[in-house]
Length: 313
Image (cartoon, rainbow, N blue to C red; front, side, top):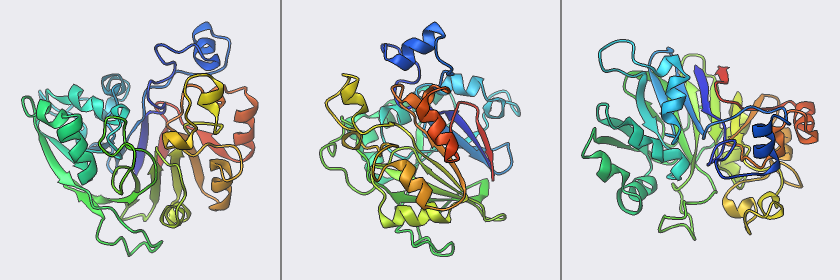
């Protein structure tokens, strides 16, 4: 199984177009050691030919341009993207669907909650119906038990990529501000994915938005061979101290890395495996490769994702 990180940044990308935080201004001036990142998305394949796009970033066209595997190669109109799967209905994960409108009907895998948002509050599906259209497939949410043979009937196989199995787990994060459930998220508004190769039995746990580690999530993290997980904020009050928001990291649906019960502690507790932070906000000091925060991650064996990063399992 091959995973390509198409975009490693949170919404707005890095640098963000209107931001002059230390990271964004430092990157523009060349005064910090950092590289630009587009908005969060990954692609997964078992044959390096047919790919599942997990989340469709607003930056998808630039990501396809930078990723030869996703480019047309077999027919006059063609794509390496066989299907799209969504972990939520946040704008930075769904707006890219509009950029794929010139193709065939999109095989789109999402929960009922996400489908509701995209059909009513942010009706991308209605817009796309006038172009390529959408072939929707429902994702059921698993109550993961930690047993590889027990996925509660929620495992999904995608036609043409049948040696990969995708199992959604409900996680605690936030529904988007435009959603009717923004004040009280429901199971299915946000999911993590267990992505398993059926032949090698290798497993990726992918969770770009995660504010709390409940038992099902911990079980999946312990079972997985690689964690590609929420790295949005370093500190709980990061956006407050920067003067950009009155909300904490958890208020915005993300578990910060530092502090008691933070992501660093969580990752240390789940055993030895590859651990990679993704969906990194432009304010997060770990984007500066020479920062003390980046050094702490390196000491603990935690990687920071970047655009074009490849993971082989």
